[in-house]
View 1 (cartoon, rainbow, N blue to C red):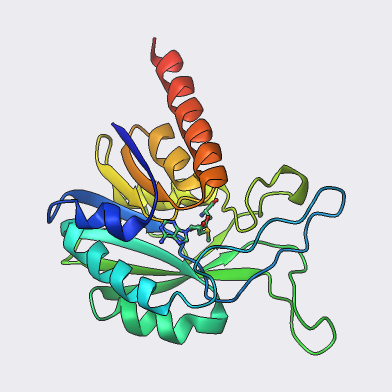
View 2 (tube, helix red, strand yellow; view 1 turned 45 degrees about the vertical axis):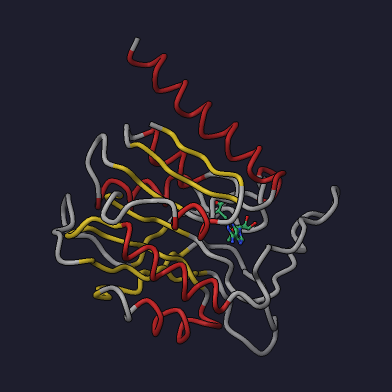
Amino acid sequence: MIDLHHGDCITKMNSMSDGTVDLIVTDPPYLMDYQSNMRVKTPKFEKIAGDVDGYQLIRDYFSECSRILKNNTHIYSFCSWHHVDFFKQEFEKHFNLKNIIVWHKGGGGIGDLEGQFSIDYEFALFGHKGRRPIQGKRVSAVFKCPKVPPGNMVHATEKPVELIEKMVLASSKPNDIVFDGFMGAGSHGMAAVRNERSFVGCELEQGYFDIAKKRIESASCTLESFFE
Ligand SMILES: C[S@@+](CC[C@H](N)C(=O)[O-])C[C@H]1O[C@@H](n2cnc3c(N)ncnc32)[C@H](O)[C@@H]1O
């Protein structure tokens, strides 16, 4: 099952029953008013919706995440170090925080090139609703995975599918329902369907919604043709 919603994630979540999803892997606006400078030959990406004043959005989102998750499940939510205090505080109102995962993405990163160590990492809060063991062998909370090369990016803050797959495989089983309210270009949905999970996702911006739909559906078709 693939259920993609073009529009506001809170509206979609309000329509969902309690305890209906098995895993959330999500990447909300970082509240940084981020403008990517990555693209030099083609126009820069647009700023991210909700990235300036999305504090109430994040509060409402974590509350709804907690309601729609089944008991004894996992949630991963990316954030940057700039606002990790706000995200952590809101997250812990609803979930038992188990790790702040470090995604070591390599590359020089952005920021003050002379006055700051290189920002070649991002955080993901990892929590339980209830308690659930991690599947597979115990691994480091530092996830090393190269970022998407700038020339291949279709979203300013796109996550590599391989990174999200690691989370999906550690925290769900085939046919489970994975949810992401902030799909962007749909990398989380691709990671879910590639591994035979169902996926429910939302995206506000029409352009990104179209890209996500196309990428997730083609990942799902590839899987179907593999098993034919
Ligand atoms: C950080 S990006 C996600 C990028 C994604 N992880 C990827 O790999 O492409 C957050 C996305 O959430 C979307 N967004 C912002 N507010 C939203 C809302 N209220 N409902 C649904 N999507 C929203 C933005 O348009 C943006 O594409």
